[in-house]
Image 1 (cartoon, rainbow, N blue to C red):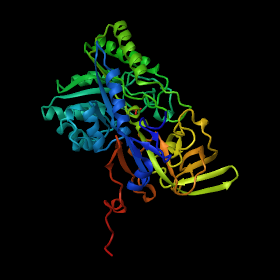
Image 2 (image 1 turned 90 degrees about the vertical axis):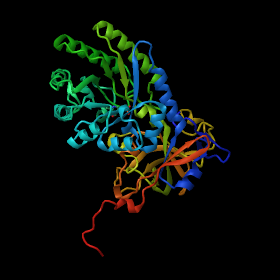
Image 3 (image 1 turned 180 degrees about the vertical axis):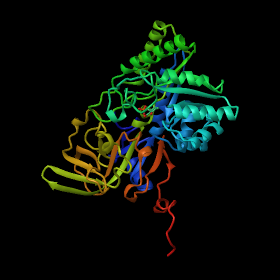
Length: 451
Ligand SMILES: Cc1ncc(COP(=O)(O)O)c(C=O)c1O
């Protein structure tokens, strides 16, 4: 199913999530509104915890905060057990400010500034994920000066092309991320770690090859390349590396055409590969890390919009213009991401929540629409063709699967205040993030003159 785990239809034929009528949520909090199904997030965390638990290797799950981060999410993740991947000083601040334990934070970023590095060190961040020589040097120098010992992992580029959109492939040979294994940069980086006189503790290597990956066989290749590299380091430099972090990337279902894999199968592929290649290369690993983002939050979130004008431009083109768009979900414009949607106050007919795989069993006659945003761009199209029951102004449109990379990529384009986020669970609802106000839009502005 594409809608969040706890979605149902009530006797008013409205969509409910977490036991809350979505229309009532819209009336209470306004639209556009991100709705997060807490039970769905907890279930995914639990599934990662249970499936990535092996008798022969200690495994840590790290939530990739770039997918969706706010104070309450950090606090939920802290309770559910994973570590937290942050990718900038700003994300680090959000995490620390929420009370997230610094020792469980993994500090990513492919161009950390000196200030970000100092901030990470001073706040006791558990691990620095080092991307490049500039950062390695800075980190080494700061640690030597302060006589501090810091755990690090080196991000390597394994030269693997994951089967996904090219904008979210991150482990190809010419990718901007990490130290190339094939170019020899990764080996050189391991050598240089030694120069810092024990100030930098190399706990492992990291690679992230892409996002929204359906064909998970690439993880076997990734594990092979990483363990082979560890063998080469041992044989060539006499240095033992005992941890691998395989990044995130597991794909999720956005539309009924998507055929993602699942956490259980991923765990089997990864574990089998670890066993196989540890044996083959005679390498002993004692720590495995995985760093999922999208597969934890993606399906847990929806965006609730209100339909404004419904415009028929010709026989074959009918627009529903909603009260948000590219400012709250840039993914369709950024990499042609596909979504599906339903009319939350017209969930009649199918009994299948309207947008699940068997949506065709609906007896209600449907029309083809394009769902467009309110922004001044022709490309501001959320869904270019979808069948829905007849929509009128004021109807509530739910776009599904917007839990990942929507709020975190949102903007104030066209002066649109950022949408509120509401959490729902067991019939209760409460705000995670307030809607921005017009005043928030000028908070950092400085007037040229007083009037
Ligand atoms: C370093 C790193 N780890 C983990 C992730 C999470 O990936 P996903 O959301 O596809 O699981 C990303 C996302 O781009 C990433 O850059």
